[in-house]
Length: 297
Image (cartoon, rainbow, N blue to C red):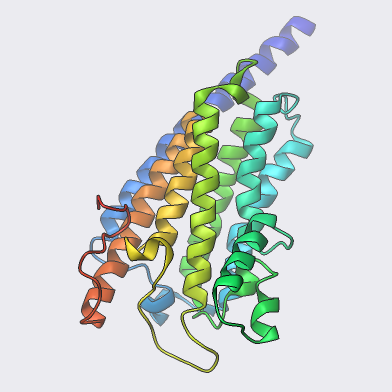
């Protein structure tokens, strides 16, 4: 009986491992299909929002709810699914990197990286109102200032994607990824972690620049200035792409690599749309700026 039970458990793990590989391939396919689709239409939210894609969901609510599964699903898997590999430090740290990103995206408070970046920025800029400064103590959705509503279909697709990817990354790192004893001291983890940290810092700082383009009471769009916006239109997108490629290098799993490639496909396409939009709208838009990768593309 024990032998039969062990065989069944081994078969179940083998089947799920195969499922994760299939889902990873599917994630790359989703990214490639999205990039192809975005050659013919613009992602219908934000400045491109339209009522043809369903009932509008308020921006803060939509962002929080659609990103939340990427935080809760890995946590749930860690707590309730055995999490056989989380006794190992590499798995714990790598899963924590994924969760930290979405803790920020879902609006949790007290992120020291964000607080440090914004404190640095406040020191560089003229003194502003107490209301503006206090807003910077919170994180992403809380900081959205009057964002345009997200069409329901776009919101629903983003929610499904975050459930999908949350399961993929959470299950891989908590139950299957195996690392040698010196992994955290090796070049893949060190360089990958540096990429993850740099990318997250660039993403947060670039979002901060975008949120503060308009003074209180102003409307309309402005050309972003400062940071990597001096080199690329999609500085925030570049930060997130760098972050997930760093995570993929630090993790060295098929699942994390698939997520990084999918991110590149989707955010690269969105950056291209933004670049074309700025060139059309502003005659003085810097022609030397690249789209999303400094000095390259």
